[in-house]
Length: 304
Image: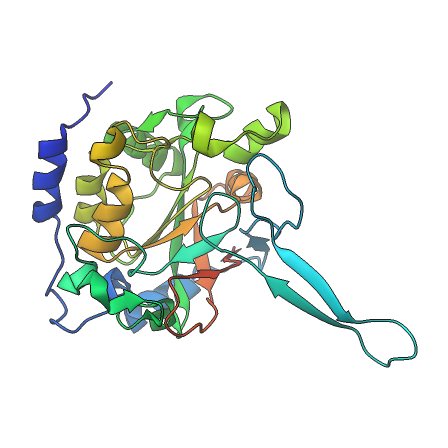
């Protein structure tokens, strides 16, 4: 097992992987710039059978240990004598229950967000920089699944388990492909399979598996465009405690401008990858155009 980096080493790594200014001082798209029209066209050619796999969890309206703030669903009008049914939804997309895309304004480091924009660009008015609507064109690229439990020959990772660069290498080898520039990297920890077997748990208290901070260099070297996880990418609770709560969120969102998909569901995708004997596919996602927002609920799709 690899040794864990110190807080000082992680901070030094932040500076090493920094993409600020790479696409200009006013850029708000970050690593989405890696997805060129040529990469999209090449990704579209991977579609063969036309099979579609949805990658989102249902937006649950039920309170559970892992969903303390469920979606509000209220009917505004229904039944006779009306001629239509109308409803209202309300939700807080961040957290550990709903499949959502983090905007680059979601997390700060030393008073800054991606590309050096001040955290003061976010306030009661929302976000003036790096809001979720920079993804209004959607995301289409090659998706690649790294099935960590399958590579480790276990059913799932347990809360607090760390994923190290050698685990990413092993999952890549299992998938017989190489993660590359512009890819959407999807990480399966087996979270939902564990939930089905053992029941729901409170991830804030009991934790979730996630990437060790040493994986940031691996991600940087591969020029990944977007990362999705069936957990929240970071180990929860943080192994660094209050000194560094979200090293992966900081390293990706802030330093590299990599948008994160949290709380996805990759169990059906893993089965499809095994069935098709390939772990790459066309990935598509169209976040809501929520101006000044820090996140959007999403239902990403994998097409084979």
